[in-house]
Amino acid sequence: MTLRLTWKRVIVTLVGLALAGLLFAWSGLMQISASSGHWAVTDWFLHWTMQNSVRTYSTFQTPAKVRDDTALVSAAGHFRQACQVCHGAPGHRPSPVMQSATPPAPDLAKVAGHYTDRELFWIVKHGVKFTGMPAWPTPERPDEIRRMVGFLRALPAMSPQRYEELTAPRPSSAPESAPPLARSLAACTGCHGSDGMGREQSDIPIIAGQKADHLYHTLRAYAAGSRQSGAMQVAAAALDEAQMRALADHFAALPGLRDVPLAATHPLLVGGDRRKQLPACASCHAPGRKAPYIAGQHAAYLTGRLEAWQGEETTIDAHKPQVPMPVIARRIPADQIAPLARALSQQQTAPKREPH
Ligand code: HEC
Ligand code: HEC
Ligand code: HEC
Image 1 (tube, rainbow, N blue to C red):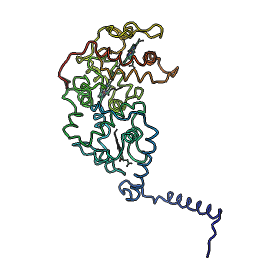
Image 2 (image 1 turned 180 degrees about the vertical axis):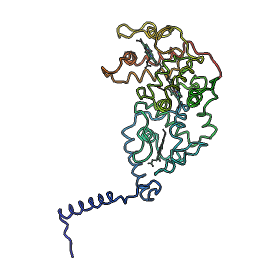
Image 3 (image 1 turned 135 degrees about the vertical axis):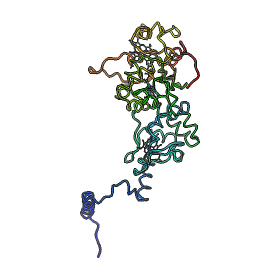
């Protein structure tokens, strides 16, 4: 018997197959239990598809610079709070609960080498659909993702001791170690140090001595997602109101930043620029005013804040309270941001002590 291929027959066959697929899905016989795992061929196919997709998209959807090796502490600290539970880390096994997922998260010390920096950046930023692999909490912080790529590259050679040194909570500086402080402080000191000085990492701000109200409102903003930082959004999401208050009061009371007038180490600080309608920084960042302390703050952190505001779109929204800094930051000439941050960071340096 010969079967002639006609359009009609092709269409009937395709519709039949689609109906059979629907019938199978409807019947409930499709095995979706994680415990049954994937067949080896399914596993291979899914991973192959994922790797091809990552290769293609990472070519077009990544910025020019995708890796930063200079600031391991905040990236390692974020890995500990957000990735270790699934992937494990030097000296730490992943949670058995997470390893029972299909697919289980791989040991990144072993597989990171299979990807280019660009591909790692893309995966960490976007996550992987149909697996537990989450996207970065905010799309606005490529600088944080660059630091994570630097950390993933360092991971294969990292000893458990080195990982602890980078991430472990520092000894508590809370004298009265009373709840709600004691429970939450350990989650901060791995990055900020028990002295709140940021462990000499330029991207981690000094919070010691900062205004308690600024620290408290900032923690609320991170938790609500209105201030963007993958690391801090995760850290703040775990806190309740009482803990935020207690932590803000605790760090504000430590010796660090101080309430002193800004010195004129850069023309814009005290003079402003009338032609650009740029008010002097000292008109708000001054003793007795509400704005946070910025003199003596880490330069890279200041630069990052000002550059992030410069990049933000001017959205005039009647429902939003009008905050001054994005408007002011956009009027600072781009080539003056780094010198301005440097001039600020060198002022009234906080008391020198052994870093914790
Ligand atoms: C809820 C569990 C979970 C968390 C949390 C998680 N991952 Fe993953 N991750 C996975 C799974 C599952 C895969 C495997 C995806 C696949 O097979 O395609 C994966 C894959 C990856 C890969 C690609 C490796 C590969 O070959 O599949 C990288 C890189 C990675 N994760 C980094 C991270 C980083 C960095 C973090 C923290 C910011 C993180 N992951 C948090 C579950 C998780
Ligand atoms: C993984 C490292 C890490 C952990 C853990 C961490 N922080 Fe941070 N923190 C940072 C970094 C990095 C920044 C700068 C973020 C930015 O650019 O907005 C920051 C910023 C802050 C700020 C804003 C300071 C300012 O001047 O506006 C506050 C307040 C703060 N952290 C408090 C805390 C508290 C309280 C905890 C513990 C619950 C904590 N952090 C845990 C790394 C961390
Ligand atoms: C009109 C008042 C005003 C002026 C003028 C002003 N600021 Fe601010 N600044 C603020 C306020 C209010 C905040 C707190 C904003 C927030 O928490 O989101 C702030 C925050 C900042 C921060 C972030 C501090 C932190 O800990 O995260 C930096 C950096 C900063 N200002 C730099 C400057 C510089 C540089 C100038 C001068 C070019 C300047 N500001 C002028 C009101 C002002």
